[in-house]
Amino acid sequence: MVDEIRDAITRGDFAPNQRLVEAELSEQFDAGRGAVRNALVQLATEGLVERVQNRGARVRAVPLDEAIEITEVRMVVEGLCAARAAERATDDDKAELREIAEQMRAAVAGGDVWGYSELNKRLHSLVLRVSGQRTAHEVLSRLRGQNVRHQFRLALHPGRPGVSLPQHLAIVDAICAGDPVAAEQAMREHLRSVIDALPEVDGTRISAL
Image: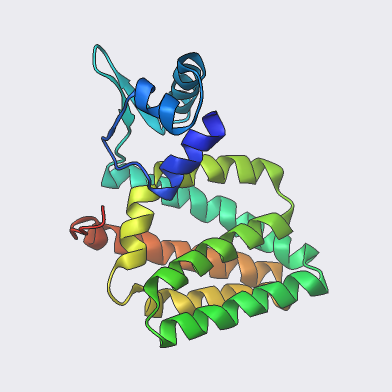
């Protein structure tokens, strides 16, 4: 139950500050009210949900300054993961990384913003999996869930794919070359770029949100 609601929040199915009504969630996820209530309590400890006295629960909205802090932590943790991935990547892993990189090139060339956004998620997830860092996986899953609104805005910001594409390609090249130092540096530079872009993107209204 908790995994299903967490995944829905992470995907952006629920908007920031949206009320999470136990009866509605119970029907949506075909679960008992007690299971839903326990899930919301756990998600509150993870920072995805906030419980308001006499008003129930709602999706927690993360302010810009916190989004920047989250990305700074990601920069360190994902930098480590990129370095470990460069040390551990198999030939099959490298082939998959290169395939995603080519698909990202095609998405940018074709103006496929949504497709590029999904490939972006796939690439970061693959780097994490190849790194073998289980503790990092737990940390990053929580941080990304809290930061989903800002990630969504950034993914749709005009011109952003063209900026991030060469950064992602540099990450792939370094991992495939087996160079942990370059891989970590490339990942850090990419997430530093994200931090630099967040203030501008935060002020952009997106109707899909």
